[in-house]
Length: 337
Image 1 (cartoon, helix red, strand yellow):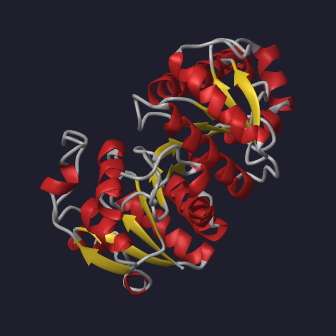
Image 2 (tube, one colour):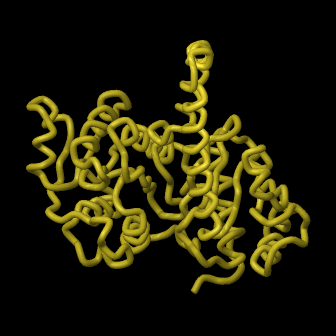
């Protein structure tokens, strides 16, 4: 298997990206293509390491200041654009980038293309909760959604959760302001009807509306929502986790008695911290794109880039794209434009 990596994307590029890529090559046994400014990449490699990866030179870099909607079109020789073209042309099996989320999603849509019949690709992070985690789809790619988009998100999330998260029959919930069937606005009402129909037909395991308070209590394995609401939920959850970890640290360092308690609980606290660490998660899959694309965290270090490559390998092996393609007829409300 061959993984294409945008070596210039992210806050710690290219050194940490290259380090993570080399680790993936060594421990996961995959071939690596590093895309970016050749001389900068080579400065991060020793003599032996130069022969372990393939380097594709790209002179430009998509930055956070670039307009996401036009970045890959204007910067055709950027590491991100060149990497996306390599993926489209079948030069690799998956792509990992820690660069601009908006630019990567737009570029993936325009260059690699969506799966035929999918209206919008979605960003689907897995939140650290429960035995398998909780998928949130969408978390920001589509601020405005139609009921059909949410129906497709539910199907795509179900396939991903089944193959990637180890949920044999993923429970699909629609994020709403209440659990009653009549809650929400027009979008939620229409989406609820579509999801219920799909559930009644046995195509997904729809469990109804879920509230924000129920998400981390395990009300559903896949939470379906529009990108605006999903992004607010995601950022709130991230902020809450950071606040709680900081507060917990303050409690244990408060006095000698608490410090002794922290020593007793050290292993358990470390395990809890790891379960919430972005370096362990890897990144966010763009579901609905015709080839696997993983968005690694912008602050990725070598460990988190390695985790993102591991996620990309699992995505390829799971056959999620193929599952979506086989079931696309059930995911559309009208003939394709």
